[in-house]
Image (tube, rainbow, N blue to C red; front, side, top):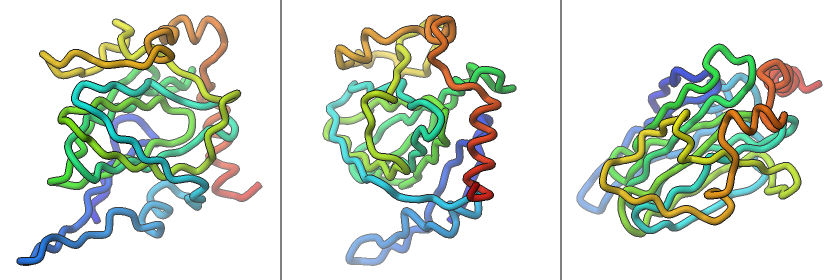
Length: 201
């Protein structure tokens, strides 16, 4: 499995080795040992989420309060989507940086998103199926969002694709508004939390 770190610390792309034969393809799309060696601490699986999306569906930008927040390992089983990571950690050297990775059923890449980072995904085809391995269950009182249409973020949304948003995502604050309201995680708090995961303290 090939591992590539994104420009945003705490986000990686995992590309599995595929073994095709006349019957189809076999691959290992998640390997705990590889993930844990990469992130530097145990990946404790607490919940698996699955979504199906029509073309243009835009989910995010989502994040959760730190601690404990929620790390994600995202993988597409059908179709194609653009996975988007946003550094929303106040004080981070890459604060406001956006990175996007195409996830599809051809290359079969996965993206790991650390706690405290913002995450969004837009479906590039119809009937996109995504699996999310997450380290914490959904907790409504800790879940937050930033508008994916915030001009300051300038997410790399495909031309000619009209985004379809939930009412909640459409009404989310901009990055600047969320920062002004004290809703964003701090980089120092995130780093301290990552260290606690490494040391078990």
